[in-house]
Length: 401
Image 1 (cartoon, rainbow, N blue to C red):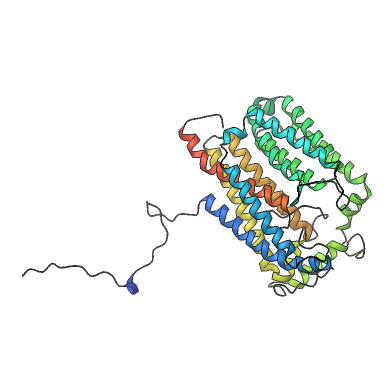
Image 2: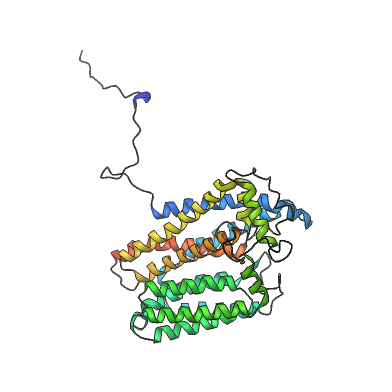
């Protein structure tokens, strides 16, 4: 009787685990999509944890439930994910259709006008009441301007690179935007938006003389806006010596620096912050990074900034991939989103650490706030749409993008 000889399967203990490799045997790196989703997911979880910790004393002092702000932040994330999913399903060609862009600009102008007749909150008229939350229109302006300017520098590329028409057209838009945002007032958002516009114009090939002239105009307007209004001037100068008036103009910044100092390298422990006990007002909003530094130390702050860096790097990778495919509109759009994230991250972190004057700008995906979370997630959806549709556009040999 013949027996068939079978080879024994290799035992589990002798199996060798192999690193993740591509078809050619070369180690592969995570895709921009995977990195982006992982970064956003991790920082949103960390945001929920820190908002819960930082907001409990403030919520109890206002007669609210302990997890009031945690529940609302979770609701904002859920709403943002829902809207982001809807935006992700929209083909990119609709975003760059000129009539649609003018409709978005008109809608944004109407909403900005409505805010001027709204009820002031902390002395500012930046929000529109929508029932479940107050929507900050300046967040929508960031997204609309990115799309509009990214299309403009491609559609009017000759004017941008060689003539003065492009400069004059965009200057008029910036002037109108400046008036609206200063009337609210929202100087921080204005700085980020105008900085993003200038950056896109620069990489689009605008002549240096035009770029410098626009920069001088914007700088002059910024200087006038700061010097002519006392509270802005006081805030701009207070960070130079954050402890010279600790009970008045330097109160928030001084408490923020004290929080970082207490945290040292590993922090005092989750939930053990002292500054959130009514010392640092509304610490769960713009100064959430300071509470993170106190409770989780340098390790916690570095983790937040590293996750922001991963999100920004993913946006830039998507932008560069579109650039390689000569899809300039898509490249500028992804680049503009990355610039917005860079600007807000740097300003918020520097503000918390006393390197810049205090401004009401959130840390993307981290600070408490419905408008910022909603629009930031919509921007991520747009990045993912560019990542998905860009290669398909290249195969169809469509040069419109």
